[in-house]
Picture 1 (tube, rainbow, N blue to C red):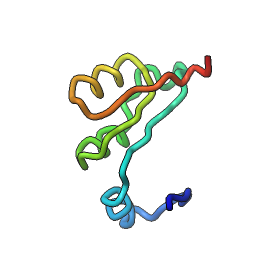
Picture 2 (cartoon, helix red, strand yellow):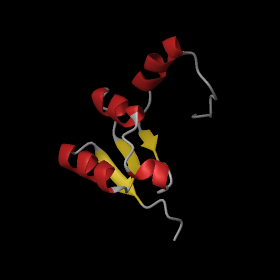
Picture 3 (cartoon, rainbow, N blue to C red):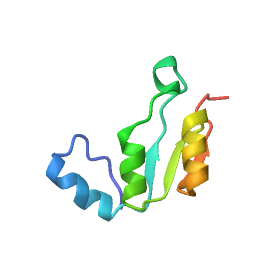
Picture 4 (tube, one colour):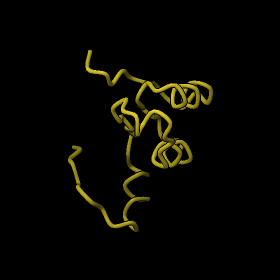
Length: 77
């Protein structure tokens, strides 16, 4: 069973990532996120965890080119 863990101490993050079936990075398509490249996206990819990411242009290119996962629409429409 999965549950929200809130803020997790840094030393526990790797252990949680190892048992995670999926990494989710779904930021809304706001001005501050359009050109952002979140570390979390690359951490999931480095750990070979499939990623579900927002369908932002740079993110889509990275996720689809690498075959790391799928992108989803976060516009709410």
